[in-house]
Length: 366
Ligand code: M6R
Image: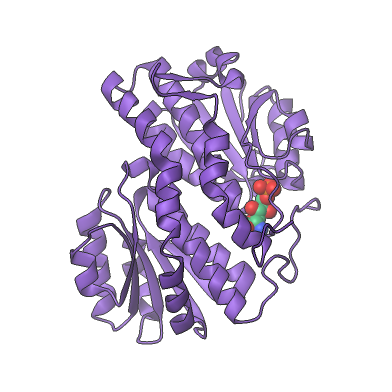
């Protein structure tokens, strides 16, 4: 059942090229320049008339929502708010009939997310579900939706659910951008072509596995780790830190790289490994200068970089390469090494990777 892999988590990490393909199969027609998502098509007016989109989710799905905020605002120019479902439901939020709520959930059974949906519906908002599990409570409760088709995710640490959620949300943003005319036809085509190439590039990123294992060996006894990223890769930093916390029980924090100087930089010394996402597109020079700040305080730097990178390699203690892609698609690649790093550290520490202590696969209590 684990298909020859030692753990479900590792199997699911390696399934990502196929899972992402399954997400866009039959929906992404590159030649024709078409994105087909019936849940979006059938409700196009609601989306186009929306004053804003509110995304509600928990955990890793909330991180996918944060990536979606950047994508929807950047490509489709729709204002987006991303909310923890548990906070949203209890704070008397302002919701109107002109709001579109997108709920994101792998399991489709998360109690807080389900309650947030019910609240939004009671105020007249249109609620769209992005779920993996077919026929789940959230899939049934929402007005419309689209499945990620990632296949069953057994490991408690979410991996392929995250990348397939981002794939689906990217397609939604592109479809809406096209409908609204906020993207040029050449950029749109380029986006479609690049999205289709992502599974191959994920495969390429997975090839760093052995190298990542040796980095895991070096840092497995750390007490803390920091994860930094900017722009589209800020949520990836949060997700990387969550993965490490939940399966290895090492304290980790994700931060927007530029926020470092407002506090967390005080933590940096020779015992602090800092994982910095520093891919070529998207604030590269700024991130390089953030890396210099860490280096001058003797922090250990693990850079996640674009293939062929020179500047970060000169400064960092280690680099892990991912293939080049469009900036908005980069989270689909930069996430891969962070998943593998936390996986290997947890295995080396002898932790129960697939069923970490205190955690359940779906959180059906509030
Ligand atoms: O099934 P859901 O996507 O609604 O689950 C949300 C969170 O409980 C989930 O992502 C959790 O944070 C994972 N264990 C993270 O790896």
